[in-house]
Amino acid sequence: MDEPINSEFPPGLKNKHEVLYMELKRKYFYLVSNTKLKKGRLRTFIATLTQLIEWEAIKDNIYEDSAHIDAFREALDQSEKIMFQTDLDSKLEEIRRIWQTEHKKKVIETQGLGIYENKYNTNTKKFYGETDKGPTVISLFSGAMGLDLGFIESGYRILVANDIDKVCLYTASKNIPEVKFINEDINKISIDFLMKEAGIAPGEVDLLIGGPPCQPFSPAGKRAGLNDPRASPLIYFIRAISGLRPRAFVMEEVPGILSSRIKHFPYYDKYKRDPSPEERRGSAFKVVMDMLHSTGYNIAYRVLNAADYGAPQIRERVIFIGLRDRMPSFPKPTHSGYGKRDLQPWNTLWEAVRDLRHTHDLSLSQKNKQYMGFIPPGGNWVDLPDIVAREAMGGAYNSEGGRMGFFRRLAWDEPSPTLVTSPIQKGTYLIHPELDRPLSIAEYKRLQGFPDDWVIAGNISDQYRLIGNAVPLYLSKAIAKHIKNLLDG
Image 1 (cartoon, rainbow, N blue to C red):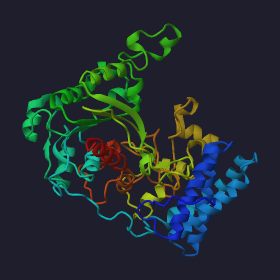
Image 2: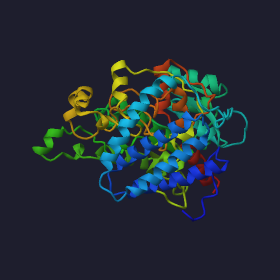
Image 3: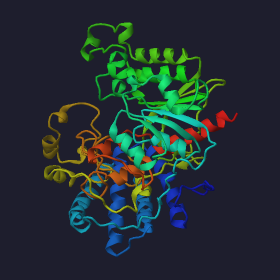
């Protein structure tokens, strides 16, 4: 730990405690990445021990950031001592029992309690119209405008935005009413109408951006690929590239597009026959790439993790970049979750939301609160006593794979998992590290990078959905700045 630390720090890291926290994160990610123990159990051990030590400090009326940082340091030191031991499970069981007792007290003591002042995410909303000389953009499938806002804050001008959802229209009008917003089904909008509303001719706009709805390629869907009528937004986006002839385009999709099939291949058929060409993994993606290449653009794609660009959230998305006159490239990562000295360590949930008041937007059922009382930070359903786990999991208890999100409690000193459209879906819980409630709307906005004063319209369900589907601003700003450099040559 005697190498010089990276001189660039995230916003808010100003004092010696926070500089220390940065180095502790680096050490943590290195330990977890290189341990021969069970990674999940080690993560839970460190997170639980950190919280127990911090709670002891809070009993002494210590509420400052240093209480958590000192607790994290001590937990890491103790974890290093057991790295070569084989009794991690027994040690975890010991501190888990202590945590359960202390947690029952904390549920009563901290209801609605906010420890920190809101001082790290000031109102930084960039109102459209601050510049009239930046590169121009047409935005399709704009959603909560996470992708758009990253470009706006990087000096671009949105000429026209579009989404079929009225809640998206209301969101845009409350935040950036200067942007012309077309609230209509994309299939009813001609390319000529888009250009008329934007006041441009073919080839005059600098950039086309958008994330065509991804249900046909999502693991949660039926994976019907391009035969699904919901794939038509993707096809429209490719038509828009050809019709608008922007200098560049950026398209965002879920990683499932890479393996999507043109036709669904039933799981049990794999034991009976080989898939046809249209049933093979990636067959739909090949068609997508053929259509994209037919536009005449130089195209590149890559799976990017928002955490690698400063987001306090693990979120992978496929980013497609197309340029008319040169080969595209991608922004270099600025952060790492593997303890690399030349990159900053990933930003964490604690850094993002530690100063927020404990808002309460969704509640767990009383039964699920009882289940969560067994589960320490960083843990999930495997921390339940077996008889309770069978009751809580139901039919999922005997299934295989894909169960890490069941009754999941987050850890402070890691990035959040990928935000979903509801934090209380049974298989994708996003429960607060200390309190028996899901993440709030305010916490969702922080993890996606939205400013605190960015208004998300609609009811609670709409707000979670819009924020959960958005592109993190950390990633969109990195892409926007990189594209600007490419356009400038």
